[in-house]
Amino acid sequence: MLAAVLYGKEELRIEPVAIPTLQEGDLLVRVRVALTCGTDVKVFRRGYHARMIVPPAVFGHELAGDVVAVGGGVTRFRVGQRVVAANSAPCLRCYYCQRGVENLCEDLLFNNGAYAEYIRIPARIVELNTYEIPPHVGYHDAALVEPLACVLRGVEETGMRAGDHVAIVGLGPIGLMFVRLAKNLGARVIAVGRRVSQLERAAALGADEVISATTVPDVARVVRELTGGRGADVAIEAVGKPETWELVVQMVRRGGVVNFFGGCPSGTHVSLDTSLLHYSEITCKASFHHTPAHVRRALELISQGVIRAADFVNREEPLTNLLAVMRHLMSHNGHLKTAIIP
Image 1 (cartoon, rainbow, N blue to C red):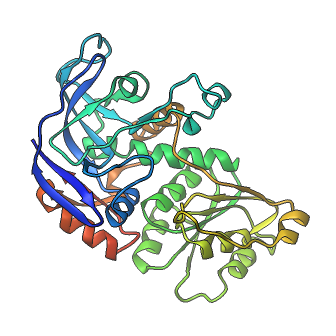
Image 2: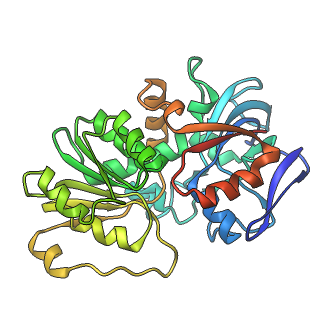
């Protein structure tokens, strides 16, 4: 089969590799759509991922496709079914799984290889995090399940509810998903981004106010003005930069909640005003990954039409063009997703 193999920093080759062989409980899926992701761009730039990718390796993790072979003992799936599989599955036995935070599982099994004609879905993911795609849902929409599941966990961690003022900083695909889900909950959304196109998309997805971080010198002050001088009930950082981590803390009201969703590079440090955190009782949280419950809920929302690929995916490219796509995304941070068609 043809696959995209990562060999190191910005070293990506589209080349023939062996079709994966199946073990007990596995599935072999023909990839119909694989979506690009900010994490994949980071992996491409750095040449590895400490937890997910050891080169040389086929990478990519947001996919939807068709079952073409089943391993021994598989009873839930059959050849010909359209499926979406998440990129991980927890063990359900460790300290963290037993406490309901399966995303922090001590033996979290990751799976990559979506940028290829076929992908093997390991038995544990088949059992816990693979689902049949409803007949009315397209492959592009279904492939959004994994990133949406992560955003759903982020929303849940904030305790967001109807009537809240929610400030969202960063309007790439993840930030835009936060905008859509916050509006779906009945929140009043203030979206902060740098590009006019991002602000326009946020408004189209329901943002009540948009702020240009390029032209507004004091974004936190404007957020406070838009919330009666108090600040937002919830502020979400969806950029992954130390300066924006520090910025969102200045946007929330007393008793407000901050979610540091965007992951900064390893070894990064931020400075926070301890007096502000203490006397204003600000809650700071960070969200990582998803759980099987969030994956199931994500597919439900996609099935209901709350989240549509048309709002987050704006290009299609063949697998053979993936190197050019990655280079483009490196220089156009925050752009929408590209659908890779193997």
